Image (cartoon, rainbow, N blue to C red):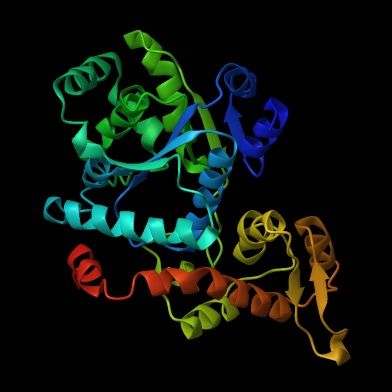
Length: 341
């Protein structure tokens, strides 16, 4: 695979890259660059996480060595979303279920590794650099960086202001060339590019993908039950939630179309498959699509009914979740320990 093909693979379905010319240069100079994504181990993982896992697959196919950081300290810094005594359980849950997701997608894990934040974020030099960056930044600057990610509230805790400082330093201490995250992380990633050179470290390339809209519009969120499909929801629950989802004849705030664009159709294309939408003959019979653009065009032209689209998506989601449900069988105690009622 040449440099241009690798670049296209990393870039596909991204919303922004800081900056593209640096990414191209990196791919020209390094056969195996290093990248990472940090996941704060807070709520239960939902189908929105398929977007980053698909992109992790793209990085691996493009020749990267890739790290999934299970950011336990970050999970506590963000307004104690994960209590300290649950951190280890949440890390174990995230590792198990993300491994199941990756297996479901058929992604090769040869150059993939997991790391836990507290395994290196408590080291002496890292801690000293936290203090150094804290001395170089104001409360306002840190809050502006973290505002779309951290829950500050009316009386914000000091920990939330440290969140972007740790995330910036993770790039250096994981020794990566690229950080990848959702577009909601943009201000933190820009903060990292601005601040690492102030400590004499190099700025990294930052890659961002869109956030999956929820079933009720807006962002899919672990904390809003009606907006998400949990990876361990039953087939019946998945169909029920998707049938009740907001699915306007529009692209904006349409979680059904977004999941088709960023997950289902990419997965189908990579495996040489088509999406089949089943319909009674009186409504035109079955129709097959081999690319998202044609599907979106027909949907917006009202050639595909929202109900038929939802039925097809529910079927495809259940295909993806089936292996995950199977792999997580017998791990109910871990889930209950991580998320006690």
